[in-house]
Amino acid sequence: MGLIPEAFARSTVAREGEAGEAWLAELPGIVDDLLGHWDLERDGDVLHGQVGVVVPVRGDAVLKVSFPHPGNVHEPDAFEAWDGRGAVKLYERDDARYAMLLERAHPSTLVEHTGDLAAIAGDLLGQLTIPAPDGLPRMSEKADTWAEELHKDAAELDHPLPDVVVREAMAAVDELCREQPETLVHGDFHSSNILRAEREPWLAVDPKGYVGDPAFDAAIFLRTRAYHLYLAGAGDLPRTLRTELDQFAEASGVDAVRIRRWCQLIVVQSAFWGRRHGFGRARTGAQLDRVIAVIDDLAVSWTD
Image 1 (tube, rainbow, N blue to C red):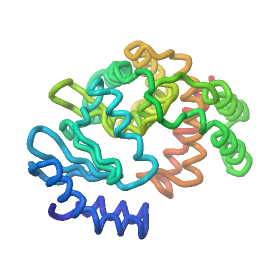
Image 2: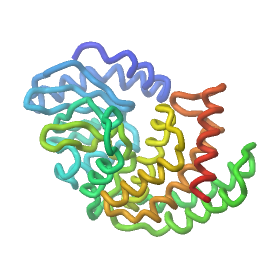
Image 3: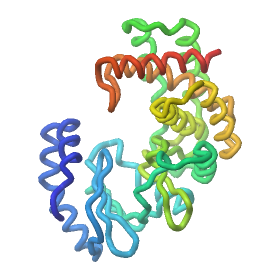
């Protein structure tokens, strides 16, 4: 299939170690076998995300093969349930090899769009909000782990977050996480996973596939949106995000109060995560310190 993208190979080995190296060695053969099995012809350069390669094929489709990880198991289940509603269509699946034949979308993402991003994303989430199929993991199963991590991080980490901010995040776990709707949740709903398309203006990709609260997806979108606004030098970031939350809620039909409560939890989790692990583009040093300071301010603003 040609060379595996170097950046993808490096990141896979860095993340997965020897298991990643072994999978990369098998990947060209896996792709060639699937191309033959599904009678496909390549139609462009190999692309990639964080966990998989995307091979364009004739017929306005792409072959996606992901690293075999539990987090990738239910992606085809989500696509199958949506059946093209708000997301790219699933044409074929090979679960043993974590492979799918999907509708092709453009590489342009919502990140690059100028306009009412929150309204666009909210409208899309409204389309994705459907009853969950059987067999998906439940987000409510994460509640105990999230509560334990919050208590541990609050006690062990050096941070300036007021007690009331941490308490509100802990209360949100009990309020939101333990009992959730029987709804299909994308699980990683952010601007980079919303692509330009032909059949519809925008379509979602890369779902995790959970049963849970659609307000969680809204909060994930706003968390990533906050980072992009920060990079763009947005002046009053908390005020801008509150406006976008309202726009998202109106467009999606998801309750704004629940979105805000999820934001209170997720931003505190992010503040603690950054202190322990850093972030993808800010692992250490002054850049990480600046990002964490912005997150701390947001955590306080969501509680005010």
